[in-house]
Length: 115
Length: 110
Image (cartoon, rainbow over all chains, first blue to last red; front, side, top):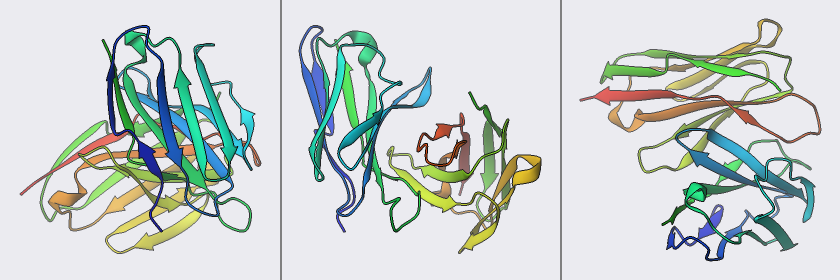
């Protein structure tokens, strides 16, 4: 399997611009997670989906953040408008809880820099 | 929320040495996973170990759920073992939210 795929790997944008991060989970996995990693706050869960349905978005920092999962093989995390404090590495992860174990498998991450 | 503490925060070892990393958590958990983040930032799942002991090559992990801690053992360290090791726990069954510790940064010197 190709593993979790994320794009872009790096994104540099100016404050106020819209940013869209993309994720393709491992085929057959029924859970998808979006995390953010910063030096100050470590790894934080932003939102997760089960069978394409958002289950818990309590970690989404503000209304500027939104996430969608239109089908089992694609999810987006959008920041609009972006701010410098959004600079971080954003990870997508997936797991196959149903019929499998809870192990989460991470993508390579998207390093976002907002200037 | 549940607290996850890892120790030591930093560890520098010579190649070939053995190491033990510790993870303490503040409440009962039904899911505990160990991850390795390599120097390029990739997070790799090492173990799912809510209780008991598992081994995978030079790595092994033990979780004593009743005493709320887990240990990760690395034997005969190699430079490729360098990176940050995270422990992550899930408190409630069916709630898939992992809470990550702050990690142990391991540096293996050739």
